[in-house]
Image (cartoon, rainbow, N blue to C red):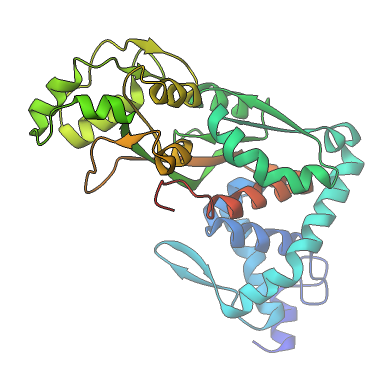
Length: 322
């Protein structure tokens, strides 16, 4: 399509080649980040045909394709990646500036983040400390995933880190990292168990040892038992404490055994204060999701925190072997 043809297809004042709209570039960034015309439409609060029109107009004006349409979504071309690299920061800054003028109060408020106490303490706060030092105010809420996702959807949180994959409308979740679980005890407890037992005899032997759990419903232990032994877990924990760091401390002190994420006890395992009672070929894992409300990342501060957590999460050491 030559210049005259493009002018006819996109008349000036209606998204034409001599009137490239900022909205086209905002839509392009939304498609680039979501990998989908449909998801970008939801993020921007416009229709999918409008997204398609914006991208086609931008591609026509630039004279090159920006996305390859695939069954999995929209994959940026080399030119698309280059354009995103050049305009992503300016577009984010423009959106943030517009947001400040439209709503001075909300743009200056702290960013509210929620997550499990253990992960927030061990990984999240150390990861976001550079942005906190740069002047971004943050408020942290600690809790269980169902409550955190409800608070996110209701607007009480801006970011939630959840062990439940978000599936409600208006909330998007990105897989962040996986935690690995291990069946652990102190060396004294481990030495008291008979060696070389089959799985059924091993679980029966453990019934004589106090079980330290995170909750009365033993969710982590249940996951491990069903994955490794394919049977229900022990029914009655001897100690219940709603903090996995406290669970680790109790097990180190010979109170009993438990199943805990390996990233929380890597130091104790390395130092010999804890030992793993089993070494399954495929250890049970649990996935954390980084969740936000659709469209919320047009707040520049929130976008910076989200991008930092997404990047840092890929580098977190979450297993005892790393």
